Image 1 (tube, rainbow, N blue to C red):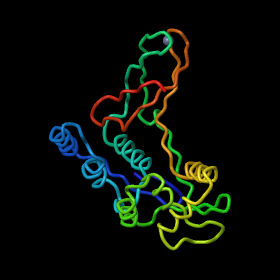
Image 2 (tube, rainbow, N blue to C red):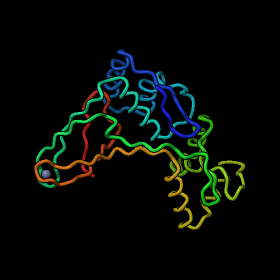
Image 3 (tube, rainbow, N blue to C red):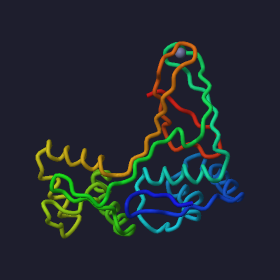
Length: 220
Ligand SMILES: [Zn+2]
């Protein structure tokens, strides 16, 4: 299936094979559940996504993973939530994709005189994160997405860091907010009304769904 992550970003997904589950469970056993992002990429994502040598943000990776699960295994969800008002259990039955909202990235876009783009090279991304790993990695990632300011391009990532660090704090925060508005975004929150007391609660799935086991939500 085709999955759109943004205006200039579409990938093709192929369903998992029976060996995928075996490989995944083996890795969990070996690493005693300390799965890294690399493990997930290697076993669950890379062999089933084309192209797989481009940059994906964390939210895009989650969306890819959820869609791979959706086309590969039973997507009927059944789980219990404890109502935070009356403490009774609420049984929820739905489809996997009913639990997720995804907003595609908006790149390329110019907002408030700033141009934003997707990260073009996975290698540049990895290099940048490695080189500046002592600084805030999320800000480094954000700056890699920043393309121009008032039409002017930067010559290097170092130049962008210098520009960002020299901004007034208020202006810097505005840039972070703007980035959050234009990047792809996944929302794993789920609203439900308690059949026992009518309380309307919003619950969130904390992490990536645990892929071969039931999902466990907690209240927001
Ligand atoms: Zn209730």
